[in-house]
Image 1 (cartoon, rainbow, N blue to C red):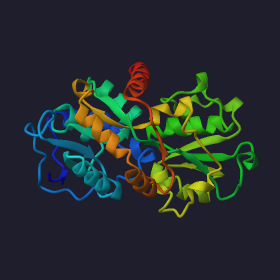
Image 2 (cartoon, rainbow, N blue to C red; image 1 turned 60 degrees about the vertical axis):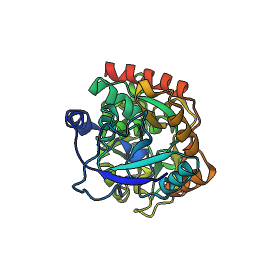
Image 3 (spheres, rainbow, N blue to C red; image 1 turned 120 degrees about the vertical axis):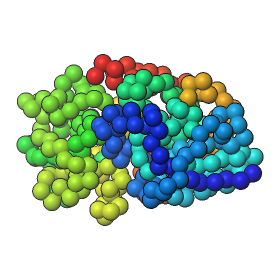
Image 4 (cartoon, one colour; image 1 turned 30 degrees about the vertical axis):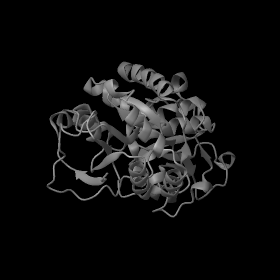
Length: 316
């Protein structure tokens, strides 16, 4: 059994139509993956279609950031178990879901439930989660203060400005007792939902990559885990982070996704189980800088969460 890794750069018909959703979602994953910056340089190679889809001998898996060590270990474990796996490394987050929809992939693993829900609603598709991987807590950091209680009333907090991370950041601040959100907040809240009269601080949305730099001029920042290492910030120095076991964190569970008709494919479920191998998980934890909180929800539980989030997304 051979295992191959390819870099996919071709935009399929559905990938082009998915660009509408992709504009708003381009930064969605920065708070929920251990990487993705190193997805590889574009090449002229195109992803093949048709011959290696579900039911064939080769199982194709779409990811963003295949250079991370845990994927190499996963490939080795899959080969040992007798599976011919081909990892296809995408350079853009907007491409793996359309590729899965069109049958160019059997599985993908790069997103959390909220991202998948938004894709399904925008594209009118029905991809489903078939396994959970991890949640990456989103934290509040400060150079001036050592605890949430130390942050003075009226202080300014920087938050990521992309829709998904903005909503999650606001929920973190609400859980920390720093803001109150209209109707209790949701995965689709914006700064307009902050109730000024009931909040201790003000929020300033900035580009997610600028939240760490903003620490020089604000009381604290919500910073995606992807940017902590480059900024020299210890994840354990967070004043507060969301609880991976809370209801509010469920939309941010990272998942394996498949087409609905393949949700019970035993080969795909076997690969999900292989990914839970201790050696794979240790490498994933190392790649995350120790921030990953492993998730163990069943496919049925994940699909229930997806249905709820999609219902909210459709209303929004």
